[in-house]
Length: 165
Image (cartoon, rainbow, N blue to C red; front, top):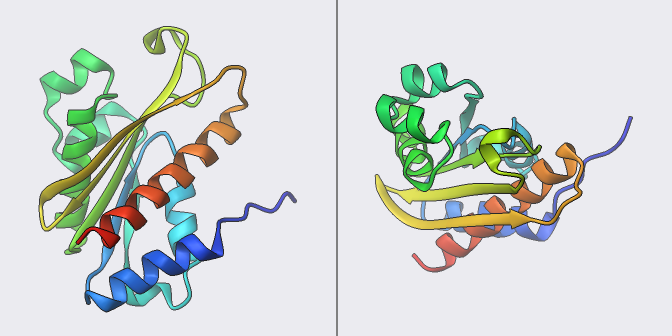
């Protein structure tokens, strides 16, 4: 079985930042399909800082569970900065966490992606957006490699957000 590895340095930075501020993190994923939750679970003593996460791949589940705006979701196939922001706020509230990270995007080229691979990553703290990025990848790229790249970008965004608090 192939081994998926995440930067120990990056995970330690996030864990230490959360510990120092006595805060916890929750994750809402779509495009990263659980990779971000996997990475967070690899932090030493993860239960102290990682509240949990949810993967909502289908639009209906983003609307039902994370309460994203249904009309807005339908207009953009659930892939936009606004939808990702809403997901991050909702998952933090759902898990009673101080921080939330969310990802949406495309790991494979589909008609809705207009031939591109990209994702949005949002980080919120206490219900307020503190960081948002659009990550664009070069084609060709395997879907798993794209998901991994987006996961690393999300972890980097989280680490940066903690440094700036």
